[in-house]
Length: 325
Image (cartoon, rainbow, N blue to C red; front, side, top):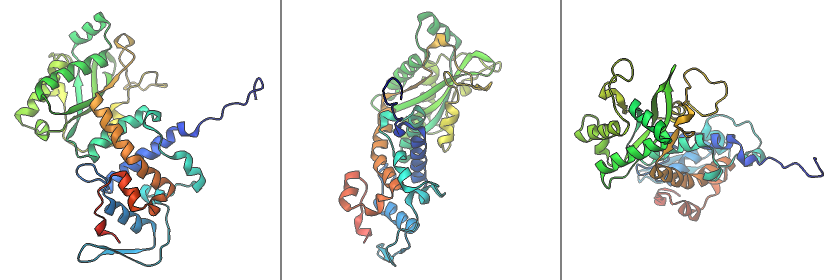
């Protein structure tokens, strides 16, 4: 007690561990196939998974596809242990402080995870995005005093809007510089376009998307490794992404302690903000998280076994309850 006042107790809901636990559960849910191709949670799949992994029921489907349960109703494994595939090592009462927080209380790193998860789980065509920034553009940003990240986002968004017209798209990126060469700036991030035709490798439309980003980022030859070719200026590999991609993309951070040589950050003359996200992607991520959050909470406290049909309806999941007893 200081000056006659009680010290404020730290709110456990601000702990980053809550975000880490939540993001891990959502990734496991994706890996277990809990989401349909359009991003809806599939109630029969989730309930059958819980029964098989957390109770002593013997579960099987008959010829008509109906789920049959045999045996006594007994909760043998906590849902959290089952989904994480490892003992949590905490008492049940301790788990309450790890429940998912509101979107605006979560960390920036958690937001980055959700940018990817909402696209993966909802089946939105997306790709990893890497691009370089031209020296003339950097000099212009310094001269005009424009924050580089926000300016790049505006330029890329305008170019893609002109190309894609009414087709929805969005991106997130994080700036960093080449090790040992602080004036050679590039960015890593995500790009999504709801029309898959624009992201098909080798197609004319795909080439137009890359050309639009090249133009927005000030393409110039000779920036890196002697000759930065057009094909290398904007790099969008077609591969399966996971949370490791988001960690790698954001390895450069303002104010990071004990920086490693490759964790370079652009100089402060280019602005304090070194990452940007379109409103479309941010909104998608928030909406997806708020839909998944009650299910994550139910896995943490084990209440999912007690959910009624009404509770499932509130979540807005794909029902197909005729498959269940």
